[in-house]
Length: 185
Image (tube, rainbow, N blue to C red; front, side):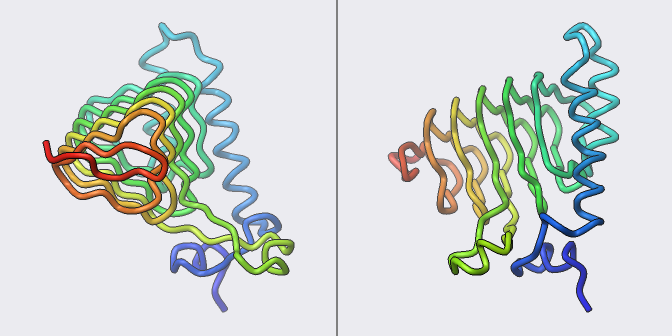
């Protein structure tokens, strides 16, 4: 029988609200995020060490400004020269992958989780999670929301305030709600 964690990885509906394994993993993550967000800005080495323990993979050079929040942490992978400004939220029920030279402006959210469309399943607390992939050399403007299953191609800029509901190709400027390509770059 599949565990709830295995169901999530397979893109199936799963119960994240009453599964002991997932609840315990989120509690560990919350403690690490609390520890991270409680550090002084000058404690750069300590911040870096917490992120390295929290994330599944990091590059050598990165900076994540506080506060930062995520669900599990181990599903997050960041490439070289990653930067995230304040108030970044990553709901990482499954993989969230950022390439090299990705810059994330303040108040951005990356959400792998979605909820069942069927009311009875939703009431039971069932959800799904689809991976998010961000390519290399991507800039993401302030207050961008990236939804489950989205891929953003290399060398792309996502304009401030955009809601990214569908994958965005490489080498474009995309803006709006819903986010749409406005020009090649």
